[in-house]
Image 1 (spheres, rainbow, N blue to C red):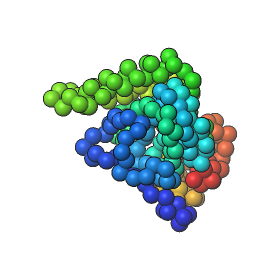
Image 2: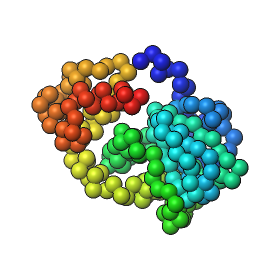
Image 3: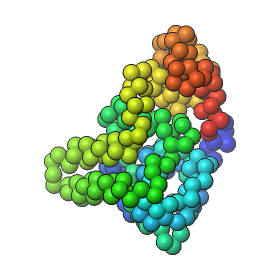
Image 4: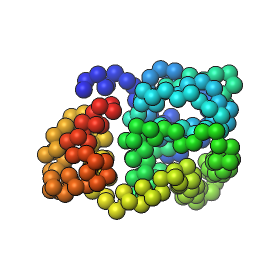
Amino acid sequence: MKNLTRIQTHDLDSVENSIIFRNIIHKNSYDITQLHRHSYFEIMFFQSGGGVNHIDFNKYEVKSNACYLISPGQTHLFKKSPSTYGKLIQFKQSAISSLQLQHLLQQRAWSGTGAVLFEDDGKRMERALSLLDMIATYIADSSNNYSKEIKQHLLHALLQDLCSSNQERQINISKDPDFFYFQQLIDEKFKEEQKVAFYLKQMAISEKKLSLLTKKHLGLSPLQVIHARVLLE
């Protein structure tokens, strides 16, 4: 697993703000055309397409009125075209207080096909941009004592709208917090720990119960889930 450290991980430029709003074409502190990782979520909204997004080694030809999600730890590089324009939002895990949304974003990161939130959908783009503009307003208004809470609620609304097609799946997962916790632990520890016994001890759960949960949600054994995460990496 040593070669995983060769890909550089970038943090948010601002340590004060957990939510940042930008144009797609902005000056980065690093080269976005080189393979890298983020320690935060990034959602890219392309009003005009062009170029290529590589997310977890999957290639996406960027379309107009399209939205793509990059989760923490996923590999990413973006090569734009001259016609490309749009907006993006970046936020830390701490900006999401909703456990259900945390579950849903976790599942998208593990799905292998979770990068595309929508494509060629002008109506969804219009809704998203209206929420983004409201978030940007409260980011700029530091005089409002409640701006942090308002930004967070608007972000939750945006994420709920973007992921609305997976609401039923989200509700089912929220009933099994142990399953979600298992996935969180794997994301944090899989580079060093690939034995089921380690996770059972951390979770204080029986192997039988964990096996039932992973079989129910993924159709895999706990060890197969760990191996799948290693292979995804």
